[in-house]
Length: 276
Image (cartoon, rainbow, N blue to C red; front, top):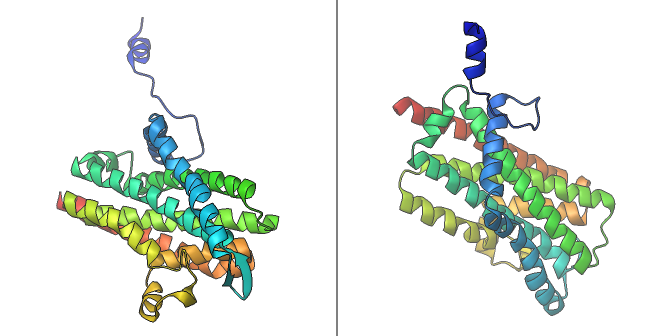
């Protein structure tokens, strides 16, 4: 047996995910890794997907009859129709919290430094985490919207349903990017844990999520414009009620947020690697 043949037989066969062969190998490997971390623990997967559907059944159905209708964008809509976008945002923030925590834990163990090295670059590392987290949010959204379609009588045109899915994807990129950015900025575990777990409910309830903006206290209403969740809720709500024509300005805002956070993440990670 020749030396070349012996080397060929002894060399291990690389294991590569069979998905999306056109993607760069580093991005594909990161997405496969995040997918395995998510799906191999079925309990965590179910806990990530089911809360939005449960909240729809318990929260919206209970308060829909109590509140009745609210006024939004010059029209009267049911309270369930008004709150579904906020419940989608709540699930989105929960998924973003999971992604940010995962990235911070990898930083604590210096796993990120190993994964940034060749052939996996920082860009592929962040893009892979964003892609898988956005896919999880999309599954959550489809499950929640499926429950909403069965439970409530939403008279949304097909284009509005498509606009909701599009708005969810863009908003997911923005908020996952924001939480991943936080994971690169903190150094202390306790401060990060407290901040990332307190941030979501504060952002959610400081925005016009479960109540119209004109019913909020003047100071809180003014501060809500500094709350990024306000733009996410407005985007999904306008997409559901009014369609793409009303949602596109908010889509641009969220897309700008996603691009800005990704740029800041790359800069923060570059600064960290230069200090090592």
